Image (cartoon, rainbow, N blue to C red):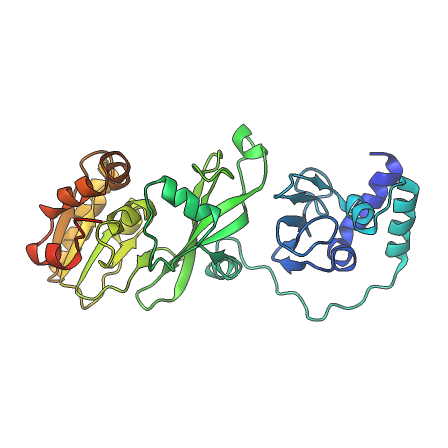
Length: 347
């Protein structure tokens, strides 16, 4: 980029939101980004423009990427494409004309940024997600053998969720946003206290090729990703995919994914609970967490029953052995009355 172009691009980047409101008027602000259909101002959400950031580098203010077309560039490119200009002299003249315009006051003052990793940041992220049906996240779960996603309102999708990577890890230098499966973390009263993000490969076949494709934020201790409302009987475990795998054969049994061994050990239990099933991960941390929570449950007068997978975990059982074998393995571990009420042996 020439010195003249670079100077103009930097000046435009300082006014990134104003540039977007003027030239990409079919879009809208979402957090630290302006989203629109494409660089030619089509309606949609596949293009993201950074509204803040350093003055240079891939994360700089004014840099944009279109997830649908893989196009990317700066705000001079936005002016060129949205105005249908060809010659750089015309682009530069339009940029200078825009920079000389008086700035209208925004209709409403922007909200202050939420503290990173806070419950408020989690609530804002959840508010801009979309339902799971028909998305890449649904395709990812189906590739994991999880096809029955009824009553999974705690799961949603974000097409381009920001990922803060490790600058020293080459896997994290490719891009700073990926499609993501978003799960709401809630307390016993149903209040959203956090979210869990699973960043996905755009192919939908596996997780994103980054150093840490799973992260949670917000207040997690005692809370979890809840499937159904627990009353007298429920199941709990660490991972979302573990609990979703169990739901393929026990779709009406309320379940909670605590997201880690430490959080499983500290999970808050409903006061009405009389029987707790614990999906045990086959590692020292998983075994220790189940033992701790089982002890807490029994001290509260709750029957605690451990569920063990045949292979490495219940999702592996589902994928490699199938639903019938998974159901058969659980049948001998459940209380007889719960087999009749919750376990689906066929279908």
